[in-house]
Image 1 (cartoon, each protein chain N blue to C red):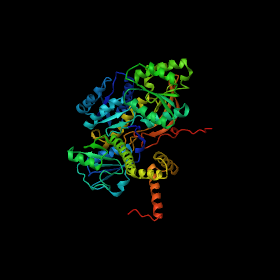
Image 2 (tube, rainbow over the protein chains, first blue to last red):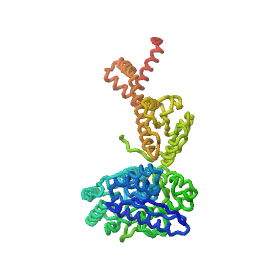
Image 3 (cartoon, rainbow over the protein chains, first blue to last red):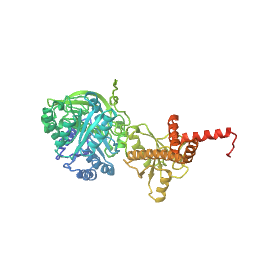
Image 4 (spheres, rainbow over the protein chains, first blue to last red):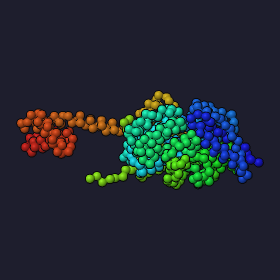
Length: 364
Length: 202
């Protein structure tokens, strides 16, 4: 007889980042189905879903709904950092846990959150390292106007400047805005070596379309000369992007077909994979320990299953593969697989990659 | 702030928490450990090796003078006050102890990171200002020496402006400050007078 354990799902099924939410939701549900069908596990998950509809003000109250009115102690959810920050006080208040399965900007280690996707030492820093080596040191930064873009750009500026490079421009668009003409015009004028794109949803699609058009006019702006880099673009947005994704370079823990984490490589995107991994980890922590579903995250991580799991008990971040890949023919092709790297949210455990230091030249 | 915040050098930094055993200490230690610091807890006095700490968090509620192995307000590292009671007397004592930032108790899941960054920035700014003020004070004190040196040089038949320019050139040649150069000139003239057997000083 399996113990039935309610598990919260807090994903926006409409709004500008619905594709990402759907990918996470798919991953979480498929892991739940797998747990439920597994005769070796004494637990089964019952999803308790709430849909904030892309409205950041609905996250806190709906999360409170789940934790107060149902038996769920764990919630898998949130896509934007803004919504995560809205939810943290609620999980703290009710002693619940948020499982967060998308890349984020780091500098956080909540006692009530598990971070199963990448933070900057697992996405941005290796990606910049690659771009500085292979394309040059003059960068332009574009992003959606909220904390993800602000922090990524701050780190990018620090890293590029420390490597002797320069930031030609740092531009922001309100979330949902497709007003990209000025950004692209500036890029045409300043001719950077690469562009870091931390725009979200429709803004990003509009930017990539305009940039691709620019590349048709001027070969400097084709992907082999001046690529667009992203730490948040995955296959889950290909349906909206189509051919506009061509040439994009992204960093992440997983791209379609890459095996090893968290399984056979049959996930649609890293968002799906990370949400899947979150639910599987939770199942490991709860299985064969009746009553564990009422324990706090701290206590779960002290259990034998917690101690030899992939979640760092100090930071609640995970060890993940670091993969850099390029879109060719509508598919991500791996350029570099850098192996497994432990999440280092405050960048205090690992140093910046060696290549971030400038190469010295003889000046005659 | 003129400089951007440096976030890279907290790894392996040593923080002391001067507070009696308490859930607040646990919560704070958890945050600091997650950030990447080493944490040592102590009460009721800071041991001598706390002088090597990079940060000290201290209890503002039960703290007292004499807990720290340095003079009040002269901590060699950034200090963060852990404030429970916001009684004005306790806040005043925390300020006198030299707090560079504070955290409100009970400490929960966050707050330590910004306290670290703010305390360090305030500490750096305080140090830079103290050094600048000390230098300016010293130079103010040397004003009389400069006047004497210029007078002595002018006594050799130079105009005051020429004597001043000469002193500046000497300072440059000796690679010392203007005031130090003036002190040397005054000392030389004094020696010369002593050798002449004219004892005019006490």
